[in-house]
Amino acid sequence: MTERKEMSADEVLKKYDAESNTMEYTGVTAKIVSALAISFSVYQIYTASFGLLDAQIHRAIHLSFGLCLVFLLYPTKKSWRRDKLHPLDGVLAILGAAAPLYIVVNFRELILRAALPTSTDVLIGALGIVLVIEAARRVVGLPMVCVVLFFIAYAFAGQYMPGILAHRGLSVDYFVSHVFFTTEGIFGIPLGVSSTFIFLFILFGAYLEGTGLGKFFIDVANSVAGWASGGPAKVSVLSSGLMGTVSGSSVANVVGTGSLTIPMMKKLGYHKDFAGAVEAAASTGGQLMPPVMGAAAFLMAEFVGVPYVEIVKAAIIPAFLYFAGVWLGVHFEAKRNNLQGLPRSELPKLGELLKTRGHLAIPLLVIVWLLVSGYTPMRAALVAIILSIVVSSLKASTRMSPAEIVHGLETGARNVLGVLVACAAAGIIIGVVTKTGVGLKLASALLDLSGGMILPSMFLTMITAILLGMGVPTTANYVITSTIAAPALIQMGVPILAAHMFVFYFGIIADVTPPVALAAYAGSGIAGGNALRTGINASKLAIAAFIIPYMFVLSPELLLLNGVTFGLIISLVTAIVGMVALSSSLIGYLAAPLVTWQRIILAFGGLMMIKPGVVTDVAGIAIFSAILFLQLKRR
Image 1 (cartoon, one colour):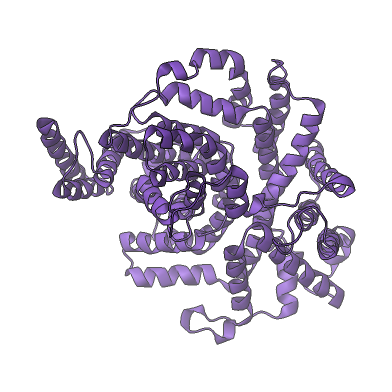
Image 2: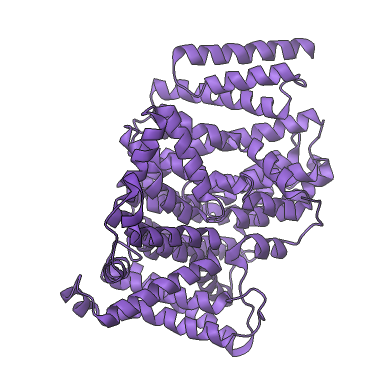
């Protein structure tokens, strides 16, 4: 790969984030699309406020709005004009709205003839499935479509499959009926979560962005860390972590904060390949940051069967360790190259920021308090949406006009489309898995390959999760990996929450793992660097994400499953020391430059602290202490 010129934020989003590559209408068409999007948000707010309809009816209306908007906003071909609706997309938009509404109109009759579909039912159902797959191609991307088509082929070709993968095969009528007319396929749990919690949280995020919270986070990060060694890189880590609390996309997070932080890093002296990597690693970590976690937290709560707040609580320490690892990598790189921070005189003052714009963070604090207090995520999100509008009005500089409030409804509806379509497409996969039992079969195959040993099973599950997560958005990759890869760990006795968090982490880290490292490629686009080298640097900085899942599977106390215990404190201390050892080893600097043999030994010592146990922990800490002593003596 060769060096490239720097790209604008819009160019990067359109190239690497399929969800941002939309039509740009004017005139009547633009007003129609806006009216549909606003109506979508109003419907979601109304049902959340006054009670949901029957689950399948509500999800059908949710999908109807979603498919219609997708076909209006995302053209069949990227080369088509962006300011004029193509007749084919217009027809598909009408069909996309109509196919799910067939369930709403004929709901009672469909229940009465359950499992005995008519030819019309099969035709409409097949059309709906095809439309969902085509919508996924436009919004989510080809990797997701390929996975869905693979599972559909498996559903029909079961009798021809070898060995453990064989099954009786499904008929077309039965497949369509199960996938489109029950709540175990397209209208299953993922779309159910999308139509309730996820939509409202994304709408909440749209209003937070509208109030200027993102810029506030970057300014706060500058005031806190901009003066430190390698300041702008640390600002990137801190601001991306803060943005990650409400952001739903690694690439969007890279562009949102990277368009400001990457030029600052390059100006300070960081190489462009490293600057892009810092933003990619930090922004990808935003998907691991509670409370939203790229919208996967809500799905995980449903799949695991625990309250949402338990997912948030379990994610806190792993997220802290991840960002600590990225921060350490940035720090050691700055020390190795003697990169100083920015003068304090050029940085915003924290006190002034909190005084003028600190009120913008109130809704975020309130929603966390409401969730911890026992409010449902849906009720908490509704309160937070209203509060974000009210709070912005406290100062004239942040006040949202009526037009901006209405525009927030449109933005929220647009932002949810990627998650909505991903959940619907993932429902097809779940429908096949439930009817063929392939999830347990793949789990058994993984166990056979690993010989029933936990570490080889974890390694094979990791590889599976990374491969399945490449090029797939956060929500979709979690649904896929939790369905296909997690059962192997659960069969080995790993706690269900730890198993789901394990595959979630490795599905997410695919965003910075070459060759399909979309977040890294976005970072390299803004920095004008080499995409592959940026991806490799991002993987090194994100090394914590490759280590932490092993830690919390082997030491489940890191997920706070049993509250704060002495074992948790020991595990946390050894995890932090291990992060320091691994980060310094990869960068080549601790208290002074490291020679090759010291880097190898440090990496070995850091890895020893993954497995809980007195012997491995003591040995790892002893190795780290010895190298640190030699470093300090040399300096």
